[in-house]
Length: 99
Image (tube, rainbow, N blue to C red):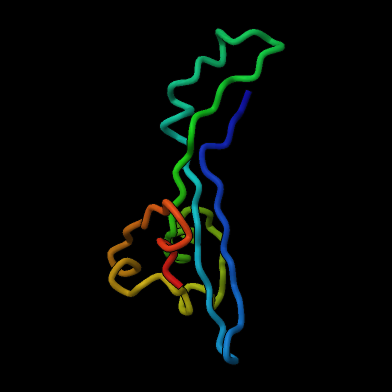
């Protein structure tokens, strides 16, 4: 059975006639490492634990996926310090999102 370890999303909007974007990544890698898929009964779904959600630079998602997001990386709303260092910002709630 194949299970995706990460999911991503790039959101774009126009506000006050300006294009803006943000990138997000949901990572469930640590939880999947602990799941015994071979030992689970065929009719039993494996228990998946909590996942981690991050705001990431749109450019980082482009690098990971090989996709071209055009100008969306340039108008990324993630603060400049985080975006230039390549840091991912873990999101615990709505207030953690850099808009």
